[in-house]
Image (cartoon, rainbow, N blue to C red; front, side, top):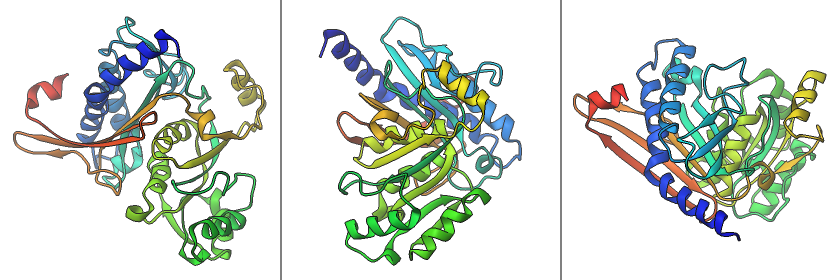
Length: 331
């Protein structure tokens, strides 16, 4: 390993203890102020603005490789945007300032602010398109499930690897009409289905802790950005994930080719989605199974954050109390 890479890792480790936590904390608090207001765009923009401000304070030369869309579609944190002071190591950044915008707007469980950071070139530079995904948690032989296998086959294979009957497997699926065939197939195999309305990143991460969440497998189609973020987090605990971009129009294929994706049908494993030293940070906006939401008190704001680091397999849970309320609101 070169001295430059070692130096970059040292700097990343240092700034990603409290510095990255502050990025998602500020985004979560800004979005939480608009919980239940019914305005998804306003909540999302508040989170984007706060996250961008904090990212630009970090001593990094960062590039957004997974963002809020492309330059013409997103006023801030678009794919290709440069962030940080531009004086530190070159890093790739994936962001979802407010995952679960509808959940936040309706004050429903599971909305989070999440981001990932890694060395330059470590995160899949994918367009903002859909991705087919399958994920399971740690402790299973490599390749026990496969994106190209049928849902029934995957349920039975996972049940065999777990040493249980298919009826004891729970599969998490986004509640979308496009997933009805998957839902029916899993149920035919005997599995239980848990439906979620939003929260693709958290949904994949649920498989990492089946004892707590009750979720064994995630299957379905969701955003490619969320897939990269989730893969980074899952790598830290030793799970498995595969994804394939859905490039079903010529425009999408051309855009992907410009971003370096030569094979539009490629099946990516977890390491190809998020390689190297990846750190993922997520702060709860609304209460959920993964994280507690932001709590506003008369003098204190409370937040809860998870930090995942792939190179060490470390998962940290940080409960914070913020007393400088005036400064917290304005920064």
